Length: 193
Figure (cartoon, rainbow, N blue to C red):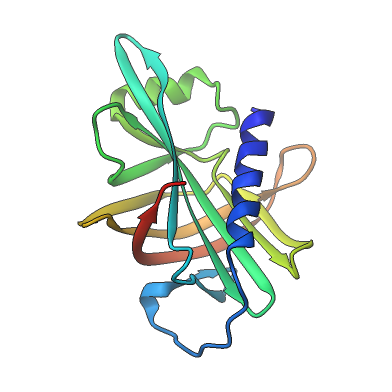
């Protein structure tokens, strides 16, 4: 699991390197999302990013793919990153509504049992929300969101991602110490590195 976190961290750092500060006052709802009440603009050069891994898990003759769908937004020198770790039956598209499993381990049999039944499931523990100031100071670090996330294919590689709920903040004993409200309704082209 540590290697997976390193991959996600490198992916988000790479995405951050593609951002630039913008003084645009464009407040169109389709290119902004909110974290903890603050709005962040998704720059056209970024959009939604999908990191897909085919056939990541097989059980009872069924194979499943895994896609991390993420977005990065800026507000001055503050950068917010949100990523959802989506599992779905091989052959199905990434689009759909995903319940978010609340397991604290990506190797939990409960998660995979639910995945076999639902065929689409978001792993909350490896989904994340982070806000950084000036590229180095971590202001918010949360994961394990509550609720559902919806990915819609609008055609021509254009997708909408919707989420309205809370990510959880944990202490070093894995106890919930707070929540971070996140509201996303972004439509953008999907980029696959």
